[in-house]
Image (cartoon, rainbow, N blue to C red):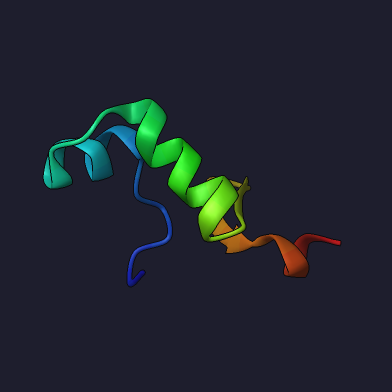
Amino acid sequence: MDDRRVKVREIASGVGISNERVHNILHQHLDMTKLSARWVPRLLTL
């Protein structure tokens, strides 16, 4: 991701899938979390 400040709904509309599906992919499959308005790998938030 070049811009880590992108919103879930922006990703969903760009790809053409639901917000819930994008949220699931980011959290479950890519293991990312939202921190200070940026998407970061969960390992870096510990």
